[in-house]
Image (tube, rainbow, N blue to C red; front, side, top):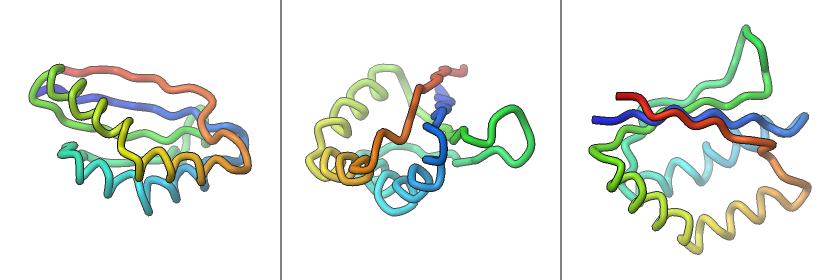
Length: 100
C-alpha cells in the first residue's frame, strides 16, 4: 500500500473556497473514481494557515496514475473546478509526497 500526502498551498484568502470545493464536490468525485480517502486537514498552528493537506491510499503507482487520469478528464470535475475558480486561482502550488 502506498500513501500520497498532498499539500495545496493556497493563494491568499482562498483556503475557504478550496475547502468548500473539496467538501461539496472533490471528495464525491474522488469516491466516484475509487480513490481511498484517508483524511483532510488544515493548519491550526504551524508555518502556514493557507495550506490544505490530504492523504490518499493506493495499491500501486499504476492504480494512482490510472485513477487520477480518469478524474482529471471527468467533465463534472472540469466544470466544478472552472466554476470554483471564476474569481481567481485557488492553489498557488502543490507539494506531493508518496509514502511507503
